[in-house]
Length: 210
Image (tube, rainbow, N blue to C red):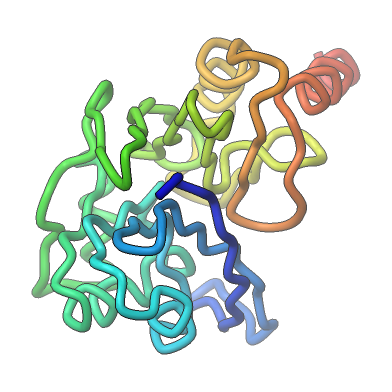
């Protein structure tokens, strides 16, 4: 079997004291083949994600960061599939806001390689949106999973806390738009793009604010 990338769009309401009741759509990415898979950002609707996975063996549930809207289905999906939850240690404080009595199973440290269905994803620590934000790069699938660090329109979001604008710009410039231009950017929300396309938008955006 040849590994492929699938997208499941889920909908939920953000949690937290500063969140409103506006529904949010998230991209939940599945990388794998017909026998095994991994999930990137288990958001909102564990039953929907589980149906998309079918009877495949799930090797990992990788969290690009620990904001509630990207991890609120992670524990339920882990309990259902037996797959380990992976998170960068710098986002543990954020994680505890959603799950005070449960910790992730494994660390998504920079340079770690995750094997699934004959392909490999490498962890790139890309702090900025949160301290522990990571992107997952798969050169064989010509794809990078960026969470809320990089969208089709350009740089990701900066929240009222936990975010660092300068760190985000540095991560995008040094660790994301330096990837091959044909690399498909698979964000946490919205449409896909390519590194070549979004790199130009990022620089245009930076020139306007600098």
